[in-house]
Image 1 (tube, one colour):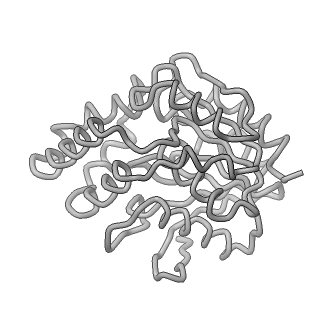
Image 2 (cartoon, one colour):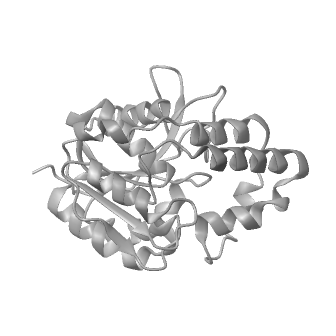
Length: 262
């Protein structure tokens, strides 16, 4: 298992899939882990050096205190440091997109290009945040099976969640609270995205149950070098996984054009 310890003492698990092409950092969604990116590794792992991390509180990257997405963005930059990578393209879905945007704000010179899916640049809606906090409380006190069906629907739409629900059942207590708080208490960055000069690609599913397409439209409009928004008809929230066949050609074209920073 490949691990790096950050300057702050956080241990971060990562998977370096190798490859001779430009480096591409992959950032997964809420509740997921590095295995979320299997469709992309299979589709174009030979063309790029694909590196996936378990974000703080997920997979085998543990957390021992509350954190926010700025902390996780610094964790991701520490992985690049550990691998002696001065720059990389960054691809993120949902929560991974939130972290990718913060990486680009923290270290713009290190991000050659940015592709985000199912993502918003805004803070969480207060009513939605309250509902998610309630969901987490029910999950922790009454058991995950009371809510997992609804969680799977929001995240994966009608796709099969059976590969993921066993992992989700292992999340409880402080770990669940910390990862949920990082999600729902995040700050908005939409008004800061004009500082990101990297080429950007925004993709969004029309059936995303977490964020309306309007959130993606606002995000694409705020990123100075964003390509026109790509919508995936019927795409769910975690569309890089559930609609990989539709998403991968767009990602491949964008990375071919911009991953090397030229």
